[in-house]
Each structure stands twice: as C-alpha cells, then as structure tokens.
Image (tube, rainbow, N blue to C red; front, side, top):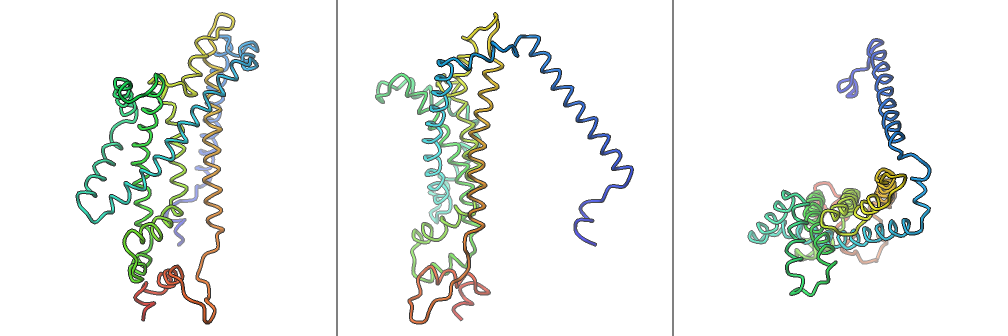
Length: 311
C-alpha cells in the first residue's frame, strides 16, 4: 500500500458529489458577498467615475510617488541593517562564550516577544524627546524610530533563520575545516555562513517581504510613508460630498501587493537559480594542488565524513 493511500483516502461517489456541492455553495456565497460590497460602494457613491478620476490629478500621483519612495527608503535601510544584525546575533548565539550566547539569546527573545508597534512607538518617544541632544531634525525621529524598530525585530527573526541554516550544514564540512587548521572565525565566515545563506535564502527574502509590509506601521507615529500619505489624501480630497477613502486604499493596497510580489518573485528566481547551480566534486588533474574547498567537498562527500576520507 502506498503512503498516499495511507495519508489520503480517495473520495467515493457520495463524497465527490458532496464536495462539488460544497464548492458550488461556497462559490455562490463568495459571489454574493462581492456583489453586496459592490452594491454598497455604489450606493455610497464610491464607484462614480469622478471619484476614481482623482488619480489623473498630478498632485495625487506625486503624493503617491513620494509615499512609495519613502516606504522603499525605509525598507532599504531597515533590510540591510536587519540582515547585518541577524548575522551578528546568529554568530553570537552560537558562540562558545556563555555570556555572549546568553546576551544574544536574551536580545532575540525580547524583541521577538514585544509587539513591533510598541517597540516603534517607544523608540519614537525616546528619540522625539531627545532630538535636540541627538542633533535630529523634526522628521528624523519618526524615520529612525521606524528603521530601528524594524531592524531589531526583523534582525532577531533573521538571526533564528540563519542559525537554523548554520545548524543544517553537514557536520563533515565543519570537521574538515577544522582538520585543515582553520580557526573558528574562518570556518564560520568561509564555510558555514555562505552555505546557510544559500540554503535559507527563500526564507530570508520572505522575511524581507514582512519588513516591507511592516513599514506601514510608520502611520502610527505620523511618518509620511505610503499608508500615511494615502490616509491624508483620502480625508482631504472630497468628491460629491464624500471622502475618497475606498479608491485611495484600494490603489494603495494594489501598490503594496505589487511590491511584495516583486520580492516574492525575486525569492523564487534565486531559489530556482540555486537549484540549477552546478554542484558536485570535480576531478583534480594530476599534478594540480588540492585547494581547501576541494578538500572540504571531498571530505563531506565521503561516507562517514572527513574521517572516512582520511582513511
């Protein structure tokens, strides 16, 4: 008996008929909900052509463009800093020194447990009250509060991702590197971390998608990112006596989805490229020196790891 038949029973005629009925009923329910929403929006005047015509206004397009650029600016800075922090925390958590390991573990667990919104708000209050002593302008406390909040939270998550990737590297790689006389720093930077990054790259980029979406939390501290800009426009632009909240939010949501899809497509492309990469052990020609990389690959591929290769 195959594993598929154990884990999943093929539905019989009655089950198939019941599943088709559930599918039809569910589809009708979804269509009815969509129709209800469309009718309510039409009744409120949110589907009138002049309401959606606001996006032909140059000022509206400029505001949306500025909001997107500000969002991408925060994301770029927070993404780089969170990746750097994630590497440092992952290495510290794997350290042989207990104080370093405990400090990194406490930092990671703290900022993973505290809601990101609370972290951002607390940082904003601290930076805002000390902006003169820190030499910050009026808009910089919001920017750095959002960037630092995103960095410490996503850096903690990225650290756990990288730690899992480092632990997934075959033990033979580590042992062969030490057998070649490498120090722990060299083993970590030249053997373990590169392989961990390659193995966990889709997960790392998926977390960067979360970082991009979390930039919208800057709205709470009045930072003029995309969501805050959309909220300001929807309340200030009045058409036919109504605000334009619905069309502005729909367009803003589409922009967020588009940016996240680009990052997701990048993750899929990198993962597919990694699968197509040439792997395996090359044959060294007679008389050519064996490099450290060749020795590591040979030791890891040999049955039993580097010990078997040595024998």
